[in-house]
Amino acid sequence: MRACKVQLHRDIPATPLWGYAGQFPGPTIVARRGEPLLVEWTNALPTKHFLPIDHTLHGAEKDHPEVRAVTHVHGARVSAEADGFPEDWYAPGHSTLYRYANGQDAATLWYHDHAMGITRLNVYAGLFGAYIVRDAQEQALNLPTGEYDIPLMLCDRLVAQDGQLYYPVSDDPDAPWVMQCNGNLVLCNGKIFPYLEVEPRRYRLRLINVANTRFFDLSLSHDQAMQQIASDQGLLAAALERARIELYPAERAEVVIDFASFAGKSLQLRDESQGILEFRVRDNGHRDTSALPATLRPIPRIDPANAARNRILTLNETDDANGNAMTMLLDGKRWSDPITENPRQNSVETWSFVNLTGDAHPIHLHLVRFQVVDRRPFDLFAWNAHRKLVFTGPPLPPEPQELGWKDTVRADPGMVTRIAMRFEGEPGRYVWHCHFLEHEDNEMMRPYELLPAHS
Image (cartoon, rainbow, N blue to C red; front, side, top):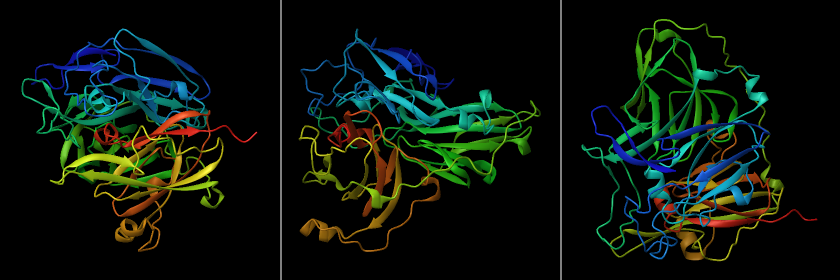
């Protein structure tokens, strides 16, 4: 991790940023299932931060080094000591060696900073990159590969005309934290409205939302459809034709786009109606020998009836007298409160997120992949009065694109969002949190302890 200067657009002076290997985004790491990797993450950053630290936030107190970092591979099944626990940060001049077993299905993962109390600033400064796991089953499907398989990391930034990165602050200079950060520009792979020359054939594009709080509503111009083949934790059961794809922070979607009928033309990837990437299709190219099979892989459903525990967990926001959000909490608890989620290794649990706030929140669990069971409307007044869950309608099944394996789920306001997972992996301390980074940095993150299986 080091400071760098990056040309985000030809018409803007180079922007000072931080990047892994001095790149923005960082290098794409490609792993194979069952082949472990050792990665040394070295903090070679300056000792002063260039973005506004809020020292009133837990973990960002003045007695800590201003610049500190720790890397988390989002979606990796990894031992606790290599997961990038938020308190395991280290200062410039130090490094750590993490082992990634890669004992998991092929999927598009990504890595980013996770330092306690300043994650939103470090990621905004540029500390993220793609991490791709491949496996034999997926390769046997003959999907587009090599130069026809491209990760697209999407985020937004506030960039001034002189190229400086700007991060929003509150009215209180002693407590600059804000509850969201929305940029004036969308970046794709670290560029403002870039173009990609493509051949008139099929491509596999791995869409990754690495924004702090922005969600993307993606579509192609000319009403061209996309075939979604994968979500957060790998392939869906079958390809799904989609006109638009909504991604909350940290969510991924892999799509196959066929440019065959657009030879000599151009096409845009758009967020709502704004172009964010232009595909310039050549007149000709290599013969397309790739395939898009009708079925991709079986996804056995977890039966919630088999759960050893059904946990009910609230999403909370506390506001000040003016209605400004002060603190965001999970189950009404702060980071430093005693651990209350302690699943057993290899057990199945369901977690029901009772959203008491006015926002949708993307909730991420480290270590495990899960399935969305359902979403169900509930009576907020009954909950507030009696802490009682009274449903006001039938459960809604997951949307078709949510029927694969996930690691981040959108918990809608006024709904109970239920997920089911088996806690495979090594015992130890992990975390679960909202992936709006501003929320995560202000108490919307909790540790959980994976206990060993009963002997």
